[in-house]
Length: 293
Length: 293
Image 1 (cartoon, one colour):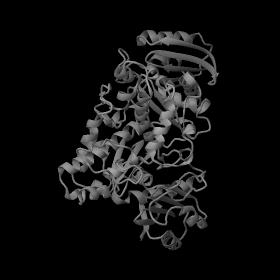
Image 2 (cartoon, helix red, strand yellow):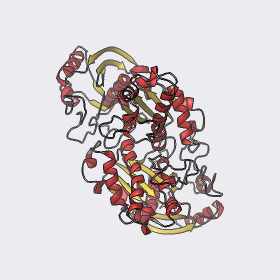
Image 3 (spheres, one colour):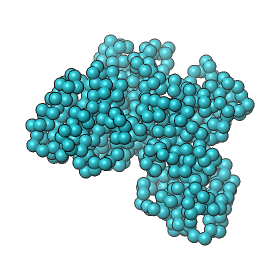
Image 4 (cartoon, helix red, strand yellow):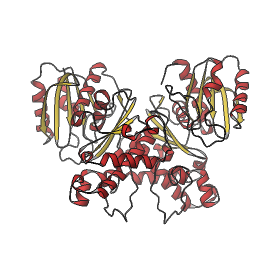
């Protein structure tokens, strides 16, 4: 049996399955302290018959470098009590292979294997919610460098005359996440994007299209999935497609980029289950190769 | 014997070697028409005893997707006569494996194997010259998606009050390449950067640091090499390091990013031989695996 943990700042989703697409049992646990949360995770896992591997898709930043001293631990997360908390420490007594990636890399992998990323060679997944993040999967493997990507923090063009909001990223102020994440929308307009009008949706789309264009120029995926709470706003994905097409100005026309952006930028195929499905796929990868990555 | 071709818009460098680090024979050919240039390349190759594989690092955009109908051909290049010219067609009669990548991916591979990228897991190489481009090598392989990356065309923050120059990219106007490539410097100031002062170098470094930061957030390399003619300007790499560090604001501190940027952003170890060395490494990869990529 494979075990998957989708670890978010608000809740943990744990699931077990023989095959990632068919979840046998699942539980949702509110994210409180690491001690309490991990003890409820273990209680769930202990109820299962036999676990062969564990996959974790975690909120970040998290150390995913196996050669690092802090491998498996949350890094400088603003979530109180969680900096330094370690999945490896919390789960090592099961003595099974564990594979860990960022939440959005996990969601990308879930979509790649069982969702809207099937039949792609290179897939990008972006989430726009409490934060903004992106993951890339190529040939069935999560891509990374010396750590997971941090694409939510790219700088964007910000016209202060049109949008005087200075951004809420504690590190960069008006980076993409600082200007366009869910809390920034609330901060700036006092409402969710779904309650706002065309002009606000166009501004949000303009910021997000800068990430879409950057992902195209830096990773050349065959498709980009945009998920997360903010993306549920009606009309946003259509505006995003149009702005991204304009921004590229016909420069890149390889494959799907020369055709319909309705095929290129899409919502998740697995809805809110992309992350937990990806965590189970990570478990399956861990079971097949303990030395992988 | 391995054969390498570094194909540039101004000149082709061809070389043969049993080992990529030790070139046996080499020739430089001015880039005129495809017919004439390829016939001189073939004359050089025909002089060699036995060629087992050919590696090509080409100016772009070039189709590197083996499953594409135009695989091996130059795409919408502004270089007169070259759009549609095909390396595969020009070289197929040798009946040896051919491996093709963009020029800057080739240079990245050369540096990874024999230059300043040795001992890295993930390496980025940026060239700043007639154009601006970047390549990534991870675990000894060039990374790409549905095509090679086009990072030179990322949008950057551009303060028109400080720099009224509108950029020279035919597609995007003031994208990074449009503002910061060698010809843009000449256009704006009428001189090369080496003849200009601190303020001009600082502005150039500011633009380039936006690419460095984007590469960090999107690829997390362990090191970035900055090469190309413009980077030979005294003081530029130092200013670039400082601006990149400031731009990240201490957000990413993984590995070398938490330490000295003098180690993280460096000039090429192979000088102007990065590209031809990479082309020979591509030939070696082609010889070892014809189905690779």
